[in-house]
Structures are given as C-alpha cells and as structure tokens.
Length: 67
Image (cartoon, rainbow, N blue to C red; front, side):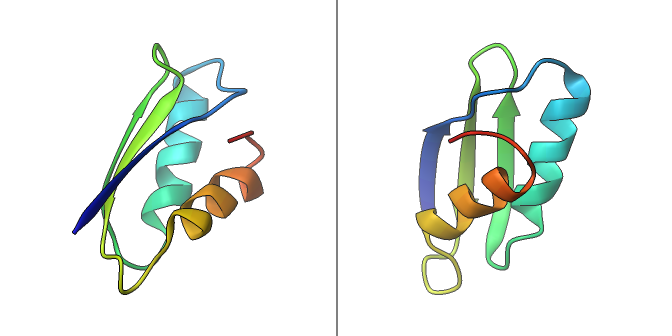
C-alpha cells in the first residue's frame, strides 16, 4: 500500500468533502481517503498496482476541484 497526500483547492463545506471523498473512493485500488476541509488536503491509501497518484488527482479534478 502507498499513501499520497495532496492539496485540494475549492472545498468550502462538508458537502465538498463528501464529494471529494466519494470521487477518491471510486478509484480502483483506493483503500481509504481522509479528506480535510480545514487543511484543504486529501490523504489517500491505495494499491500502487491498481492506481497512481495521477489517477487520484484526475478523480478530484473530475469532481470539480483543483489539485
């Protein structure tokens, strides 16, 4: 398992956190996604053989947020 931490810009409320969390968990290989509104970041645990950091960032961007 690998852990990636990256900044997520554009989140303004709990609904945003839920949207980003849902988008990340939909990526194949993601085991956990801890998204923080206060820190404006996501910490994701994922299987490197199934997903890449680029895949995770793309999922966040597809949900309408900046990475």
